[in-house]
Amino acid sequence: MQILFRGFLALLFFSIVSVSFAAGKGEFMTADELGALQSFTGKAVIKQGDPAHGRSLYTFYCTPCHGLKGDGEGQLAKLLDPKPRNHTDGKGKRAGDGMNDRTDEQLFNAITKGGQGINKSVNMPAWGHIISEKGRWDLVSYLRAIANPPYVPKK
Ligand code: HEC
Image 1 (cartoon, rainbow, N blue to C red):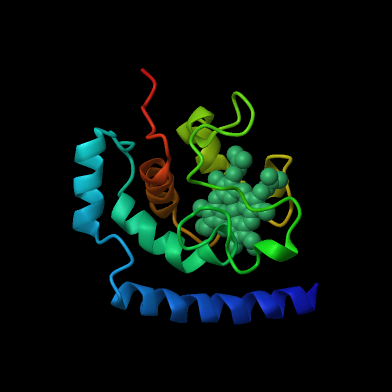
Image 2 (cartoon, helix red, strand yellow):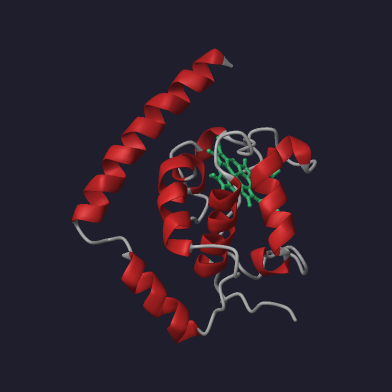
């Protein structure tokens, strides 16, 4: 367990380095681009959250497992079973299992309580004591912004 944790820290470090590198090469969306993407797709990102801030939190905390693009292909993904969720998969492999089928509250809960709190893999950490409540809503709104097909809020 401790080895896994040390490996995690090391990978977290390298992923931050590679993220800064990628950002330098313009592979990442800026806050403006993200805003443009949202108005283009007409995605009303949830009212509580700031997706641009969510994106920076995501880059720091989530990419080691969920990947730079949120597709579940982070550096640690190989070691994990079940695999980290592909956050870009709006539709899901089975009906009703897409990211777009989750409510905002379900995503917020998953982030807050971790896998253990929602009867999923314990490898998904709980972030409730690490990321502020606002930050966790910002993450939800970022997750909404990267879903494909685009997330359409339910009335
Ligand atoms: C140490 C690896 C790891 C890190 C870091 C991590 N996750 Fe996860 N996450 C997982 C795994 C593994 C699953 C899949 C759990 C399952 O399907 O049983 C998951 C699943 C999820 C889910 C899906 C829950 C659902 O409804 O199916 C959400 C949402 C999520 N993670 C958000 C985040 C966010 C946001 C962060 C960063 C703040 C994060 N994760 C960081 C490993 C990780």
